[in-house]
Length: 615
Image (cartoon, rainbow, N blue to C red):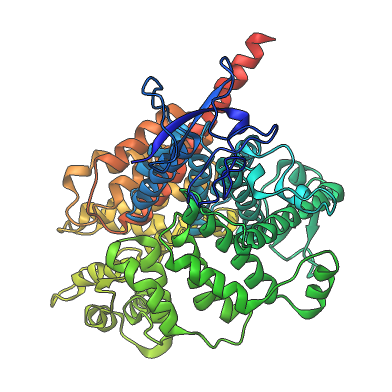
C-alpha cells in the first residue's frame, strides 16, 4: 500500500519523475515535484503552508506516523468520476430525474459533476428537440465551462503550447488541471453542437430580442410564405466571430492534448483512462466532422488552423469507445450517429451495418430498455429495410376511418380489414417491439370482434403521440379546423350508445380538445377539459396513458400562467403515481423537461425577488 507524504500545494505537480531525488524510477502515479529551489521533492514544506498529500509507492520514503491521511485532489477527482459514471448509468436505464438529482448537489464545485449534468441535459435536448430543453442545456453547459475555467492553470494549454519560446512541460500541471483542460474543451465542443441544434430546432433559435427586432433575423429567401425563420445565435457579428474563436480554442486544446498523450514524456496518472478518453472523444469528433465538409469550406478552415482526417477521427473514436472510460459511451453514440445518419445526410449512403451492430450489441445487452440504444437499434433495422409496417398500416386505416360514409375514400382499402391486419405485422427489434407499434397494435384490437367499435379520432390521437399539436397550435386556422372535427366526435359519442370504450374515448376527446383550446388562448376551457380526465380516472379501462398525459398538459398550461409550484406538484404526481402505460418513456421525457423548466423559472423568480429587495 502506498505511503503518504505532506507537501505544500504549490509543490504538487503532475510529472513522470521525482526531480532532485536522485532516483530515476517511474512512479506510475502523481508525485511531488518542487518547481522552485533544488530541494528533494520528498522534503516537507514549511509549516503553515496549505498542505496537499501524495501517495508514493512502498519503499520510497518513510512517512511520519503522526501525519493524517487527507483526501488528495487526485482521490477527489477519482471519486467524482466514479459518481459521474454512476449517474450516467442511471440515465442510460431511463432514470433521467434520478441521474440529475444524484449529480446536482456537487454541480457548483465539481467540474465533472457539472459537465455530466449538462451533458445529460444536452442528450435529452437532442432527443426531444424542444427549444426550452436546448436553451436549458446551453445555459448549464455554460456554467460547467465557467467552473472548468476556475480549475485550469492561469496560462491555459492552448496559450502555453502556442508559445515557441516558453514551452511548459507536463510536470507544470497537476492532474486536476490537465483534466480541467479536456473538460473545458469538451464544454466548448458541446456548446457548438447545441448551437447547430438550436438553428435546426423548429426553424430557428428562440431569442426574444431577435423576435422583437427584425434586424436580428434572417428570413428564408423563398418569400413571406416560408415558415422557417433562421435566427443568428449571437447578437451581432462580433459575438458570432467570438463564438468561432471559442470553437477554434477547443480544437487547438484537443490537438495539443493529443500531442501530449502521444509524447514520450507522457505519464499516466491515476485517472488517465478518463483523461485519454476525453482527448479521443474531442479529437475524433473534430477530425470526423471536418473531414466531411465540402472541399471549399475545408480549405478555408485549414487557412485558419483547422484540419480533418476521417480515418484518424474514426480511429480515435473507436479507441475511445473500446476503453473503459467515462466518455466511452459518448464515443459510441458519435460513431452510431455517423454510421446510421451522417453517412446518409453527408455521405454516399454506404452504411457499415456490421460495425454499427457491433458497437450497439454490448450496450443493448446491458441496457435492454435504454431508450437511446433502442432508438439506434430501430434506426439500423430501418436501414436494413425492416420498415415498421404495423404503424404504417395503422395510420393508413386511421385516416380512412375518419372519412364520412358519403366521402370518397382513396386507396380502395377497407379500414376495418387494415386495422385487423395490424397485430400480425408486429416487428421485434433487439427482442423488443417499438413503442409506437405496440400502441398501434393495442388500439387495433378493438376491430378484431365481429361487430367492432370504431376509434373516435385515431389519426388525431397519433398526432398527439408524435407531439404534433405543438406545431399545429402555431396556426390558429388549422387548430380551429381540428377543434371542429374533435367537437363533432364528442357530440357523436354523447349521442351514441354506451359501451366498454365510452369513458376512454370521451377522455381522449377531452384531452385533444383541451390542447386545441389551449393553443387558441381559451385557457379556462382547456383547464376544465384536462381536469375532467383525472375525475374519470377510475372509470378508464384501457387508455391509462391519458391520465398522466392530462396531468402533464395541465402542468404545462399552468407554467404558461406562471403557476410553477402547482405545475411541479402535477408533474411529480404524473411521474410517481402511474406506471406501465402506453408510450411511458416518451411521457417521462416530457415530464422531466417540464419539471426542469418549472424549477428553473421558480429559481429565477426567487433570485429576482432577492435582488429587488437588496436594491
